[in-house]
Length: 331
Ligand SMILES: NC(=O)c1ccc[n+]([C@@H]2O[C@H](COP(=O)([O-])OP(=O)(O)OC[C@H]3O[C@@H](n4cnc5c(N)ncnc54)[C@H](O)[C@@H]3O)[C@@H](O)[C@H]2O)c1
Image (cartoon, rainbow, N blue to C red; front, side, top):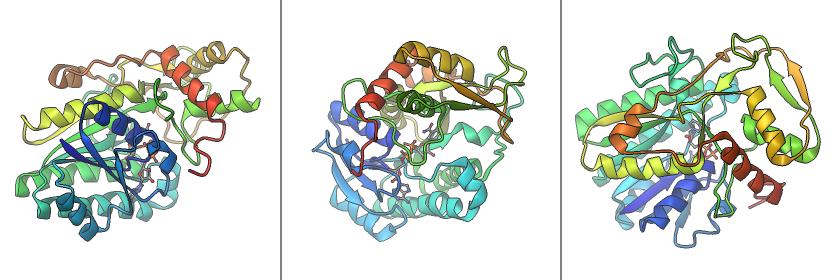
């Protein structure tokens, strides 16, 4: 299959490029490199990189037809919750309007299959845990709102134009590729696991926000899914979508929750040194527990996470961080 991967120079995108190529698919990446890294694609010379924004509808149409694209996997987005609250219009522009342009180009070019990076953020504060796909969609920040708006757009574009899609609602992506030199390098980094490991590497303390939650050790509990398992789910979803037209949504997590303290304790074992903590107040809007039900992805896609136990996640992430203390550098 010939696949266009938007945001393919980013964290999850580059791991998905690795997966697609290893399964014989032809990959074109469209990335404006605003947050991604050319270095993330260095190991995959067969992947063609087009540098530019998804909002350039004419250029995307040309790429779709010149490269005879069969399907699109759409990672390109702004995805910092705090930034989205400070500048919601940036998020509507880059995420919602950007996706609108991409879909316009797909409709015009007759490309009818899309896998979309949605997020657990569409659920907001969940009524029940584990969270399944039928849980109410009520985001609590502009980032989650844009993901929910795009899911609705995909529903209507399916109704009107027969464009088929799978929205994958990831919980917390983590870990790094065991075989290729690719890993997590966000600027700024806001995710717990890279923050903990970078703190270990640099010998500084890590902040723990809130120690009085109604959880066994008082810290928040989150569901971490290995990025290699996520990448595999994209390929499976793509193949599944060709047999199942519609506008679908699946959760992707590992179905288990780990508290911040558990993550830090396991990280200490993996890195072999103590990691100091600074206990701070709760952050507004941080729910106590977010945990996915992933029965639907397991049953329908035949997806079965292989890398998502906490030690493996931390070990692969640590291997990446200690070999790349400055991430991809300037590349
Ligand atoms: N990392 C997570 O835990 C997580 C969780 C839930 C959802 N997601 C979603 O998954 C997707 C990928 O996340 P990630 O962690 O790999 O992020 P990332 O920032 O590493 O990757 C995003 C990529 O998209 C590119 N990009 C951004 N806007 C663009 C535009 N307008 N045109 C072209 N390229 C553009 C960036 O340069 C970057 O390479 C995002 O849509 C994010 O919202 C991530």
